[in-house]
Image: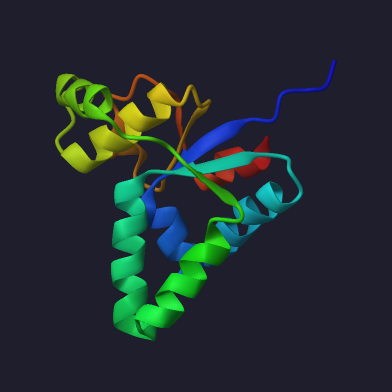
Length: 139
């Protein structure tokens, strides 16, 4: 029986680290995406993260380039669905930042193995494991 590939939802900051080449975080982001290219992990993102990523890309590179870059990213990312159930459940977690609650709720609905973020402390109420990029890379 083939080994199950771990599946994680990326917090927006990890994708922004990659596309913005933000130091000192870009190296870990590149390595996480390399794991996805090698099919050693499956990476997911929430729809509202894509909107944020598009916003930043369009400001720095223009709308056309932003669209092209997002399409390339989507070759490696799956989009976790957010519906009314996900939204309502996010209110029950007790997060300070509701956007983080949406991330956790979307990851739970998609039955993922956890969330990858650099802001682990913000995800304390998460029902799923929350990992730093370096923790995923060490596995």
